[in-house]
Length: 462
Image (cartoon, rainbow, N blue to C red; front, side, top):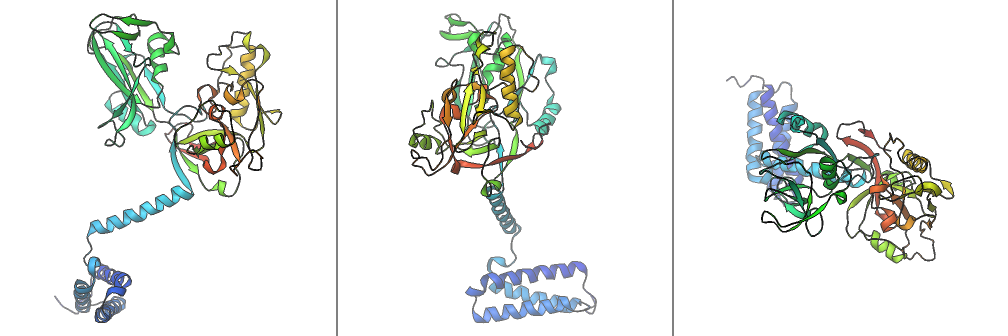
């Protein structure tokens, strides 16, 4: 090789990598190097820098100075000498993690809605029930549904023949259990699920679903065309070796291999929570707010709120703020709601008032109140937007006036303002009516944008 030849681009790139390691070793190890080591390393870095800046860059000079710096790094570079790829990858991941944690803590926090307390504004887990086996998607279709909708497939394929029963667990329809691989969280860590036990021809079969999923309603709809398992006949059976309480799901005589039920559970809306805005402006009525529940019970205990129930856990909830500090709220049941055939098993419909006026300013407020007015006239009226109407319960029983606590109140020793929050799906929401007010320091942020799944709700939140 002619040493007067110019260095190639790849040779320059290799020399620059050695130079980068030399500069890094100097910057991070200067305080632990001896004076002689520091001097030699500085000289080698300086000389290689000079060669790379020269025109032209000759191979002979480049190789000599790169080798000299390489020798100095062997002596003084520590971990920065010939750094392994995995070390740099770990560094990159650590920096990325710090950035993600920073974004999550101060700007945008991801949140997945598990329940349907905010339906139809936001969806929790939703079922997609297949009427028969011919509709069940194949593996490729299920894969596509998983990607686009976050859908998980479930089915109960019968292992015996006969009538199908649901076995009651301590008086209830299910029992809680811990799911492990492959159904655990991230496939590895156990997670709590609901476990339903079916019986056919003396054989028990178990089906597990997520703990937040309302499988009771789906069973009732599938096998009896009704909304509640409570309307199915309770049977105390002593045949086929089984003794206990069970619900007969159907008069149909199933055959071994029949697909009793097949359905998908669609992932609840995944959204980003805006954690920045509430640092500059106060939360306001109408905001879909995400908050933590850890101190809510204690806050309401200190201000003597006559709550119906306790939350008893520290989780993230999403509800819509209905009342701000100092606001007066009242629910009024229409006089004729009981005389027109309205089904009140899911609570008594009521119209929400805010500071003496019908609550307005947000589509959820307006449509829920409109729905109650329609129910007062005709319980069978169409409901195209699916808002079920508010329900007068708990702290907001009929005509009961409540005042959202302020930190200046004489009976408020907490020094915190409170907010009143309710689910848009008032018939299926455990909210402020049951457990009271949300202290201002627990409000994390406002729902900002739904980023998954890819449905018509994708985009900015309201």
